[in-house]
Image 1: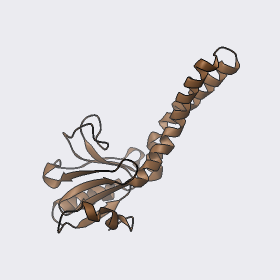
Image 2: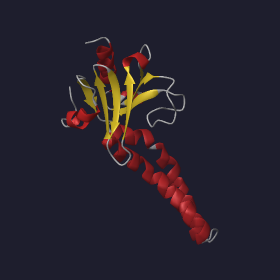
Image 3: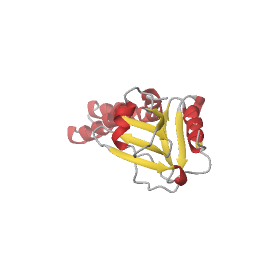
Length: 173
């Protein structure tokens, strides 16, 4: 299964000779937005407080403007991060898992099956969408690695299907 349809053409120059793509998927925009929405719970009160201080005459524009900019950044960040997911493709081939980005910050993360954990870990909060962790001990400087060193396909709409496809690919099927 290839989703989206043009994923194969975007992945073609990243594949090794004879390598086949078994499954490809993009992170889901709405799952990514939902996972970052907590920033709005901070940003809205932050902006309201900043504007209240300014209009009450308790903060000068020199103080209020930088504080307002921080609040606006918190409000914009979930949307910007969700839009950034549109330039990412997660692929499972017959040899490895690939994370390919082709947007403003292009990069490729490749994890051969031998480097992966014995069993992938599915994190699906609320049962709708989530992350598929499949390798530990990775550099935390990589974009898709959390602070503990776990590499993941993040913000998937159907994380369980991706886990099943990864397991099937690792077993040779």
